[in-house]
Image (cartoon, rainbow, N blue to C red; front, side, top):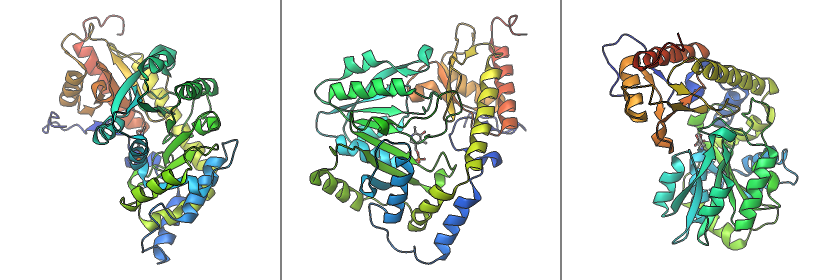
Amino acid sequence: MESIDENSNRRVISLGLGDPSAHTCFRTTYVAEKAVLDGLQSQKFNGYAPTTGLSDARRAIAKYLSCDLPYKLSPYDVYITSGCTQAIDVALSIVARPGANILVARPGFPIYDLCAEIRRLEVRHFDLLPKKGWEVDIASVEALADKNTVALVIINPGNPCANVYTYQHLKKIAETAERLNIPLIADEVYGHLAFGSKPFVPMGVFGFTVPVLTLGSISKRWMVPGWSLGWFVTSDPNGMFRSPKIEECLKKYFDIMGGPATFIQAAVPRILEQTDEAFFVNTINVLKQTSEICFNMIKYIPGITCPQKPEGSMAVMVQLDLSLLHEISDDIDFCFKLAKEEAVVVLPGTAVGLRDWIRIIFAVDPSSLEEALRRIKSFCQRHCNQLQDYQ
Ligand SMILES: *Cc1c(COP(=O)(O)O)cnc(C)c1O
């Protein structure tokens, strides 16, 4: 941000941060706003909630998630957290022990690395394969795991790769975790935000094969990250995580953490049960449209390529071809110069574990996204050696 030229009269466009609420086309549904207003004005929810969450909210989340599972979650499987971010911390804390390691994807979501460091967990990165729809490199998972491996983290639909995994691939992942005898941590904060040919399948479907800790929130599907309403859920029909000892640990841990405001929790049953299908359909249509703008415009920009058409979530990885971009030394340099010359902000791939890539957020209103991509195009053309193919 500091390298942006303040004297430029051009508006800064950020494709760097995954918060669609800034754009009018991603306004949340009236149902959600009204549910919060009513909860607030009822005066019933100004007090403390139970530390694991209001029971009506836990019940509603259990019901919402059970719709897509071959078994029923109990409200006691559900713990309310401050967004999915806190659910990540709960999951890593519950599996952490001295000397332990967890397996996390590269590219990935940096909060996992940060959180693991605080919890003294070693992070081992397995690869996602860009040429195979960013599927998990199962062989690299197996090669990294040892007797101190305590969990495997899967983000689906994926940030930062916009991938959506098939039932078959998720099954393979579940069977791998079963073989390694470790639970899965399934980050499904983008659950249902799938707009390609593959439907979203929750990892909990494989709960009989391997215990799954499901993490989610209303931040992305309802476009309200500032409401900080998330969940940590044991999708574990065999009850491996339902031992009194673990439940007591979880309960105590929640006793020392603050959750979301009580009136936001009180709104959860209405938000989950009464949101119009039309709202979801509209969100999917807008994301499909903006992801296609992104993918199609990048095809005509020299020096950058998007190997895989986005199918879900809000972010996509784009590879830099530094042999063409002759004045650019790496992804960080690319982002600094782009910010300075074009007032467009994108995230260097280094921040998510892949050097000489960039991450672009496409959950942006279509006209700003097109303008940003036009600026990226003139930037790349200016810095490119071989323009003839693209002009
Ligand atoms: C946004 C995001 C989160 C955090 O969700 P919040 O509900 O905003 O805390 C977690 N995981 C991934 C992969 C995300 O993209």
